[in-house]
Length: 139
Image 1 (cartoon, rainbow, N blue to C red):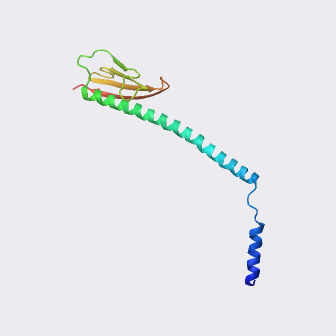
Image 2: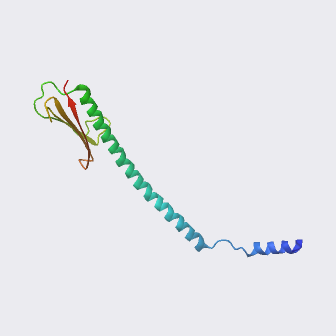
Image 3: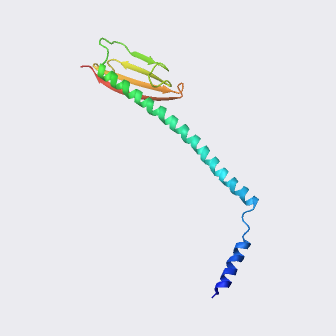
């Protein structure tokens, strides 16, 4: 066991022998931190791009569902004898300037009194599309 003065002398020697970090060690540590931050920055760009694509897809599905509900509520135009195609071009849909919506109503298809309703929504100049299709009975 050390006596008090010897222990004090030993701790003083340890403190005197510590020289701190060299410039090379600091530069290497900074390089490692920089590379880690660069990796996170790249990941955030990918995440932002994915969120943007997801938002456009969600909006497209919502637009298709909304139009499908409108057609169900309003019904098929009376006296419709041939296929009806309606297009809402890019920039004409409120809140969705990057989307185009096409509605197709085919009367008496697949049988008399049953009408096929199809809604197609595309975005990014037709690069992506989503579709909904249903049948509506004439009352």
